[in-house]
Length: 433
Image (cartoon, rainbow, N blue to C red; front, side, top):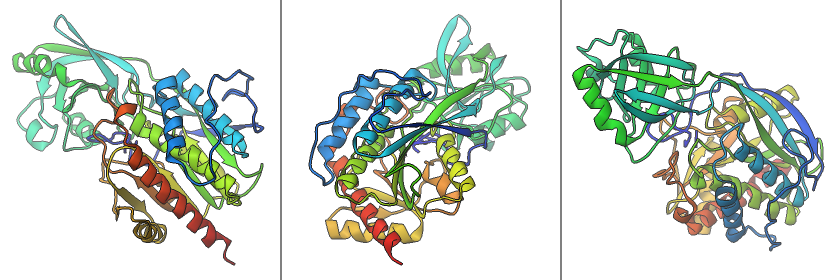
């Protein structure tokens, strides 16, 4: 998720993108093997076997296995994302849709490997989206959570702030140490392993995250006033793409169902968001097989984890065309839990909750915490009524532990069933005169 992309504890960006995404489009005909850039390539994906028209959770799990175990990490602009785009395109085309790969570039928000040097120790790090590229060095100063209490009484002028992850948004930690004239920020994970997240806007010095195992070294450096340095790659423009499927070329999208296909670095992204992507693919197949695809479009988004750039690019394009959908259904992090969190606009949320009750599916209308966000927000900001389905449980996202074996097929089935029923209900609303 940019929910889950992380902007605070374990989430993805909840703020609006910078607007840097500039969409261009290239079309592919159903069944073609064009690459995301439009170049013909052979695909190595194995088609999911044919199945019944109704939503089938087993087929969703088959898609998820391919995305996470055959492809793996799907960082925007990297080979894994390109492989995922090709697979998604081919599966949607096989379901009978007119499929378009919509390319765009976004500026400087890609999560990248970085290095922290503390004495003779080299520590692996990941940039936070929005971090400035280059090198920064200075005295290590420990600032706790980088809140007012952690910074009070400490001189940060030209220093590298060492902060614990937790409580505050990453953006707030950055702003607090920036205001105290720090030269860089290192955030130590409060969970096992590496993590990445977003600052929501460009920083004016390097900001990185490190694993929990680096805590002792960095806090000792701060206690002794030792020098540390951060080395981050130069910020670059990064290419990504959305995949958009319509019943026929040029058809209007009255209901658009989507979820992001990208991941942060160093994770197979089973829950975030292979689970949502796989569910989108199965819903597309089932609804087309039911003959309920008029006015219904499907999309998967790139660069969600870097700032909702893909969904922002699609909204920008549809708005320019005067073709924004009436409803948007978002699926993000739907693989672990025992119920459904339903988020969004009052009308479609109320409909979904009523349907959940009739289906015997435990569901709760809620809102995301401020440190979470997902692609529905891009549509919501444009005035589109949205409903966002998620499990509401994010224990391993943005980490190497977000793996297929921890996904609960029953939860995937539950959320898929509720999304299927809700989409049918929204289509019926759209069809009314």
